[in-house]
Length: 200
Image (cartoon, rainbow, N blue to C red; front, side, top):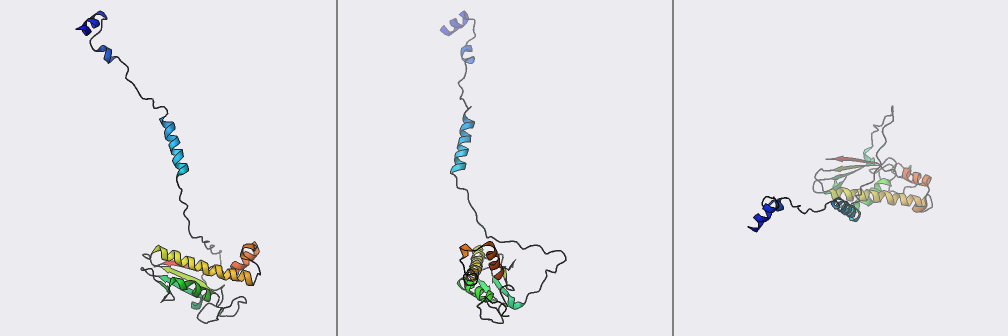
């Protein structure tokens, strides 16, 4: 009754006061700034993965007019194959991964043709003629564990590293960390890294 009297005096309709009132709002002007600051925070504090791979120099393309299909003698090929179980075979003989490095070193340093003056191998006819003619053939089964591939690559790199380190020490009469660019080139030429990879 009182509300009706007030509305009649003010010439207003009932409930018009509530209908015309301003609803409270939330100021969202700074939300974009807050979201941007949170984004910066998570970018700065998050760990960015640093994946590492196996460093390999891709072979240079065959020069025009050159014959690059040079046949390799069987004794100059060190064959490594891995089956689906991850078993490693060297020249068709199952070999523990721990023995791979030493067998490869003996193969590379064999010096069957006696042309390598810095080699100290046994000069076996069934092993490589010299390090510059030696090649590694690596075949991996598609279902083989990836760790087998990594372990083999590690053993191959270790074999070359030890042979080159010996060359630097005994032939160049210096230390590996002190060699010049020319000495590094001589070391790499003495034991060139030649590998053929394929999948089964």
